[in-house]
Image (cartoon, rainbow over all chains, first blue to last red; front, side):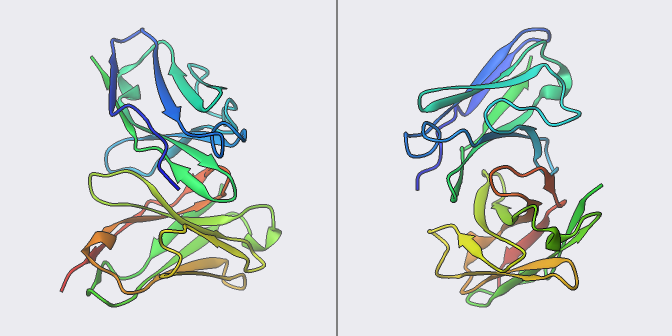
Length: 108
Length: 117
């Protein structure tokens, strides 16, 4: 069971939009709609941002959105804000669970 | 508001067994609505799923850790626990408990466990 593939880092300026990709296989990301995304600030526990590909939990700003095409899921953050600077992880559930390696988002 | 809290030793010797407990408040494990999971994060690295348990005791483990992991549940105390045997320095990590399996919506604050003699 291999980790999902994420870019190590992405960056953007305040107000811009960025997209973080999460690539798996037809056995995980591509085969099921159980992709979730987590935001983690330094020294803190991860926070759920997106579940089941594109659903936002209550309290998560609508600037955060999720999508999937084939074996690749994506997290888009529009209107970047300084507080969005964090590590982001994707995850896929297929009765087993696998995480991506994480992406460090820098807000310039 | 559901809250999870990890507890257990912060230092474990190599070859020994790591034992942690997660206490759940604000919700009942016995409700049967959720799975309950353990996840870890080595210092400076990414997240690794360890396994999850249902209130009935049924479990599912990460294949890479399966031979060393046991997750159990005590519904009377609203707790679930992790045991990881034959630990090495590679098992040094922040260990989180979380609610869910298909996604994790509530997390504990995490507890650092260091494996060292």
